[in-house]
Length: 354
Ligand SMILES: [Zn+2]
Ligand SMILES: [Zn+2]
Image (cartoon, rainbow, N blue to C red; front, side, top):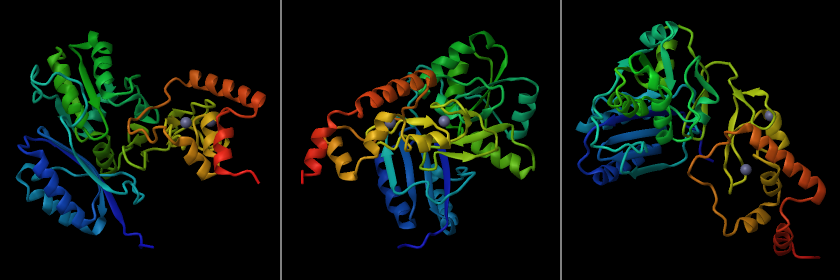
């Protein structure tokens, strides 16, 4: 087995014109693979958005490679707050039409007219003074950590969050509004969009939560961001403070644990306490649990023809409805002994009658 080399997870983005993102892709794949870089990177004509993990010893070499590319020179690298060395397992670089799926009509507004960038100290002062703070992330990201008093969107995609926030803040066009997101990239678009919508005083947390935490820790100050920071890699989240801001969608107790349902055809994202994780075998429901607890061959047989591991992030957002579903399933399970009558065919195929 390969010895565990210490790795560093980091992210960076830049809105910069890339004439030929496909050529960039080939070049980055070649250079980064040679360094043992893993991660997920998006390239578009409008720039780069990268989340990667690499051997810590090669951090300097990686920075040199980036600096040698004129479009990427001096790009700020945001180092992950909490490292487990397993954030990514492979390298994917994709060319996309846009860096973030915002659904906004490009060309109809000035996307370079962005909000004022605030450092952590200034952001905290304004937050303390009662300024309106808006979380620009999705509902499941806000669920386990956020700035106290922030507006927390109910929407599950950035596209919907943008419209929700525009509506929710409609009466505050003259007030100062402080936006924040994970690493800052979403606020670049959101602040320009809100300005276009007539908001006169839009500010954004520069470098997002990740760089905010780095700054307050370097300054020896207490973080006003509480709980866990959701991240888009295998770590799922990193601990910022010990506060438990989440609520288990299965039993309602306070927890900051977020996980995917382990049933591969489901993969639903849910805030789930450790007790419920044990009770439901790391699954979202009794139905998924029944499949997940089958012998691996039977699971495989059952999944034939079904879609597995959706790449679209879907989260349980209505805890009440989800608990109702669980109650119904438990009742049906008690009555019938199974939630999957089709399994009798599956097990007959996999385990031949003796
Ligand atoms: Zn629970
Ligand atoms: Zn499930």
